[in-house]
Image (cartoon, rainbow, N blue to C red):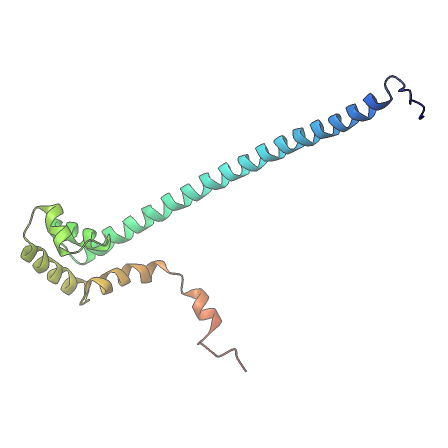
Length: 147
């Protein structure tokens, strides 16, 4: 028969405590690193929100400037703003409590004052001013860099 092994008190316990200690330290480090990551994400989110607020303000200034240059009436400015937001004639009429024909006539006057012929072209005027074309100019015409 086999001889029973005698356990020395503390022999297995010490290695078990060491493993638990290492696991506890790893968990603590993970919590600290996770908290730091969350702090960085919150800071980045705040910076993004600030950038969006600046862009929104710049777009609002651009819209107001163009509406003033085009000498839109207050009613035409409302209709133009709804059009820029993507509303169609029926939606604009419902929002303003006006007839669809009135909105169509206002849109026609807005297009004439802006020098465009469609809803899409009106929107393109503003998008074009917001896009940085210097990147396109630096790249040159399409295919120029290809051999």
